[in-house]
Length: 563
Image (cartoon, rainbow, N blue to C red; front, side):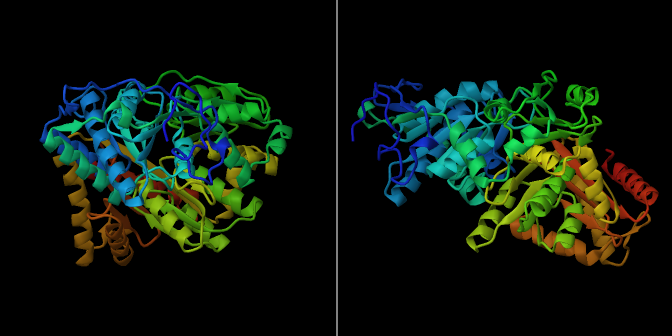
């Protein structure tokens, strides 16, 4: 079918849509006249200006990171040449997959508000079209969960998501999303990485003639996301409106405002926008949300809350009525509690090994199963998909870094629906969020403490030394020396977890020592930042004992991590 590129077309055209796809998934769609973003040579050949060694580094980053390839924009590892190379690799992957399916290759593209994303997307559009791949281009900055849902509904060969999430503003991020709405698992990223390396070794790629170029459609998927939220039937917007909650929201200059604030406006729920200033990165941490904490604390309304999202709105930040930052671990607990107790839902709880085991206590009370994965939502996503293929589903699945999804929703982090659920929880129980959290934690029947310590170490040798020292401590424990300060290492539980992490990924995911009293320490290298992270948890019947145990473990780990 020939396309008149000067006209606005209905997306029900068979060249771009499956027959069973609703038109209202993609309102305001236009096929754009193709404008070359890449130049033709006389023979339609374009040179790739990335050497093989750099290509291998970038390809390895794409295939092994917990979430795509990230680096400083404009550096040797993330620039227009790197973006071009990665896109050729993705395009070749899409063409291979489309050939197997007997379809026209098609890729969804979109990204966040960063300079790296806004400058790279037009280039990506031109390259893909130039090599014969159809492109569905989300032109406006888009939250990760919105792009993931759109990708799930549209079933392309793959989607390109440009975001460095919560990382520093100067970083660029190149991520892949599969047609099931999840960050691409290793089996996909490795295939794309191979295509990237092959393209670099070849040194060039061929551009199609104008008649054989891929089509380009501009899309705005907000309405499809809003429809999904409505169909889940978990958010009572009328109840939220009647609850008279004073809502303060900070999008940290990311993509959250385009969706979360628009949903509130569409349902006529009042809110106040707070701007916390352009921080080092759009990360909704306690430190970065000081202005939001002050706004909530200074308000006199009993039902008040502060809400925030990171740069691509897949993570969340929540401030209680007293201006206290609620940790992501506790937000995940509140979400599980709300869905189970107030909505009557069940299902497995999936969490990364860095995420609070207080969820295990809740799961035991609610008679639910717990699954533990390595850090990285792509592992959680694979378990969600496997569970659903067997006819089951999750109650919640989350990570302590602020990622969470729920049953019936995309297998990807969604910080927007989390904020809506916090409002729905307050409206359901007619209590401030801090009071609800206190009641839920008391119901677990123990004093629980958790802390994350990050240490920046750009030297790989120093990182490896820390990990190796922890492994040596465990080797001594296996030989009978189980003491770690005043704690005793639980050898069997520690070994079982190491074996489990190894089954998910070769080399495991750091090392987590379990102690006989239920406490634990995990040390691992961050997959997205130059950090070694230590995750400490303690349990006790007495609050002072729990505090003292936490401090002792912090002191012990500080000695190990001091270079």
